[in-house]
Every structure is written in C-alpha cells, then in structure tokens.
Image (cartoon, rainbow, N blue to C red; front, side, top):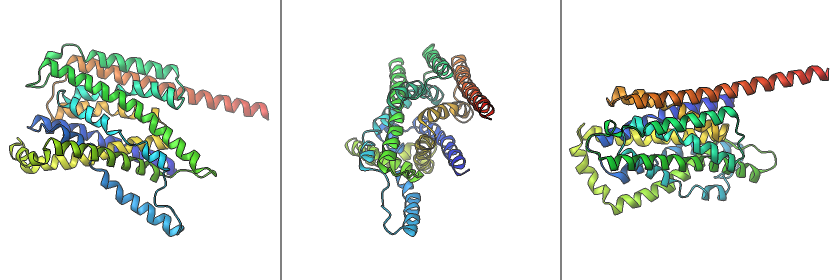
Length: 339
C-alpha cells in the first residue's frame, strides 16, 4: 500500500508539473525574452527539496545516531552533472513554438526513452510498445506540416523550425537521461548490498543534485548575459503587470520542480518506461489547457497528432493489461498442475 501511495504521489507531482509549460509560454507571450532565466526556472526550485530531506535525515537520526547524511553513493551523485543541457534546449525551443505544439513534440521523448532503455537497462520491447512508439513518432511528424498557420506572432519560418529541432533534441536527450537515472538507482542498490532497499530519499537526493548543478550552470549564463540586471526592467514592461511577472517566475520554478521530482520518483518506484508513458499521458491536459487559458489555435494537424498520441498510449496500456492477464492465467494453470 505504501508503494502504491508513493506511485500515486509522484503521478500527482507530474500532473501538477505540466502547468510549468503553460507558465513558460505565458512568460514569453507577454514580453519575457530572457532565455537563460527561462532555463534557470526549470531547476531553480531545488532548495524546496531541502525540507523533506532534512525531515528524512532527522527521522533516520532518531532511529540510528550513526545514520549517514547522504544515502546516495558519490558516483551516483556525480552522474547528475550536465543534465541541465536538456532544460536549456527545451527552454530555447519553447521560445519559438506554441505550448501545444511543443508539448506534443516533447512527448516524442517516449520514442527515445524506449530505445535507450532497451540499450542501457535492457527494457523489454513488446508489440504494444513498438506500436505506441510508431504512432507517437508519426504524430510528431504531422506537426511539421502547414507551419505558417502555427507560428506565434513575430516568429519567422526559420525560427519555428529551429524551435522544432531544439524541442526534438530536448526530447532525445531526455530519452537518454531517464534510463541513466534508472541505471543510477540500480548501481546505488548494488552498492548498498546486504538486501537493504533504497528509500525515496535517494530519488530526492538525485533530483536535488541535478537541480543544483544545472542551476549553477544557468546562473553563470545569466551573469554573463546580464539577466539579473534586466529582470526589473522586464518586470515593468511585462504585459500582465509587474506583480504577476514575479508570480509567473516563482510558480514556474515550483511547478518545474514538481514535474522533475515526479519523473525521477516514478523511475525509482517502477521503471523508466512508465515515467515516459506518464509524461505522454499528460500531454492532452496541456493541449486543452493551452487552448482554454492561452487561447492558442487547435488546428487539424494538432488534432491528428493528439489522436495518434492517445491511440499509441491506449495501445501500450492494452498491451500491458493483456500481458499481465496472460501471466496470471499461466501462473494459475501451473498451480493447478502442481496440485
């Protein structure tokens, strides 16, 4: 029951985290144009994890005075360096694309996740997974058609295609990183040894280190680009008002942290493939929210891509359900024969 509640908790974090995409687009569409700041927001909320980690450490100390401060092996924490490049690519691509298009494009990370999960952590590929990958890939290709009606105001055709390529690049890099996170968990479990199970604190520690390293990288970029001096000026020129400008920044940082913690949490509780599937599952939510709240156009191409995405997800879940049912029937038959 505790494991199921933990899985549900991380799914909720992922669902809430999808709102960060809307806030990022809201920032750009109302006068924001600081690329390094937008990337910084995706990881800058890492200090929020210090509170639950401190509570976890206090609980361990209450049970064992010799409990370590950090549970993760040093090699696992060192592996988190450099992950912020993915956030930078995604933030750059989002500047040139409407959130509904970028949301569907980023969902293609499932394709890359499946491929690299097969190579890195030996994830088994079933016909349902292959079918879902094919449908999602074709759905993303549909978005490349009739770009003139999809470009945001002031964005050239070249910039649109640049955003298209950058977002796909971010999806590919995320597809590599997610299996590496699962591999890091396996290495940590092997290092723990003795039959000891890893706790959820390991997932939070990994996300904290990823956030800290990436934020340090983005902070350096903001200093060089003089973003800190530009923030007050940009806030005054923000179309929704100065107060709402800072609210958008704060809530974007919080929601992005929810999203990434939910992702590494699902990987920790189950596996990489499920995390990729869940990220794609929440794409329709982002689609509808972008049309309702940001008044973006929902073209026929996006509709076709969305249907293909949902079709692919339904195919995957049906395949998983069928395999689980067949496995139970086989086990039941074996028990009857044993009797």
